[in-house]
Image 1 (cartoon, rainbow, N blue to C red):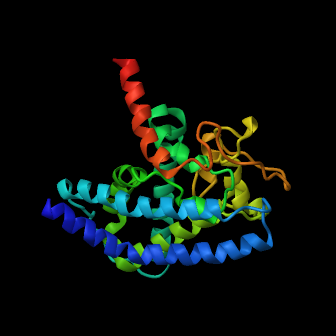
Image 2: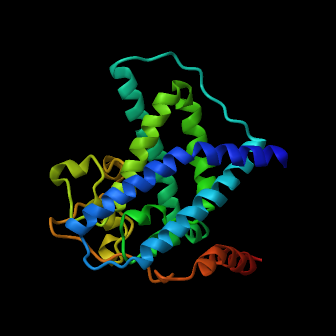
Length: 269
């Protein structure tokens, strides 16, 4: 137990930098959202609720991740020191591998109901904006840590602190930028790099946008697997799901996955 607490405290302290970067990025993007919003007249209540989800995601989620690493130590693949453009290439390759694994996991979340129970909170936001990037159920962090973080840390963790910091910074940028309430597409370039318009299609509540644009960083992955939807220039659909209310209480959303799993288990028994 002491080992788990030590990991939890260490991870929380180490994550302080990324939390600071994320809050600063959210603040900057929120100002831009007032300038060129995809959806006008969004309230402050939903943003505050999302920041509460962010706090739970970080504190409880990191606790779950620490529990995993208590029993499964972090391992790095020995790598040679790289310099110049090879360092840039390794950062790009790291991000691409993360997104490729995430793509498979993300599609599974939309395909299998037990995983959707974790993911539906993220999709329930009817006012998609920069804070929605952290409107995520806390168990997502340890689950993604095992499925995505463990293999990518093994492959790329040996490249050092600078490499890891750059990957983290780009990951935060992509995450927050993609969810922002900005009337902003990247034209022909958004076939290759994520934009708020592309990811808004993924969060759309319209039937024609279902099960598309799963990639978090590189839409080319969706193009490879046939799940890419190219929006029209003015296509910024409404978001949210019908299964869970956008303004559902935090207590209700905290309990909901467990009640869904219990019902599934009872049904299968």
